[in-house]
Length: 121
Image (cartoon, rainbow, N blue to C red; front, side, top):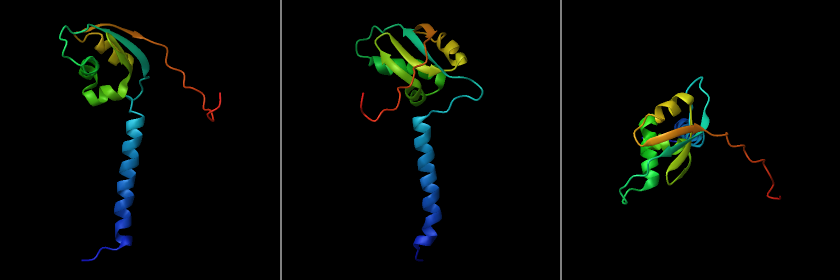
């Protein structure tokens, strides 16, 4: 059975729509309905084990609240030794503060987007 371009067009259109939706979800992670997302900073206990990748350690702590390391990666704003910041709802931040290894969670000022420029200052 031969397949023509006109028969493949609907299939390609559906695949393209899925690709666009996947890219949009990766760029702008979905937020829980009706809840505002803010930037929170978590101060964490640094593990004694020298072999641990500290960035992965932060992702695993946040994953306890968000459900997966992938979700933690998409919510994370900054990560460094002993702290990280992430975009969370107030409820998620409250739950994060109860995760073993998390010492403190505080709300930060939401970052202000930089103005669009044409490359000139």
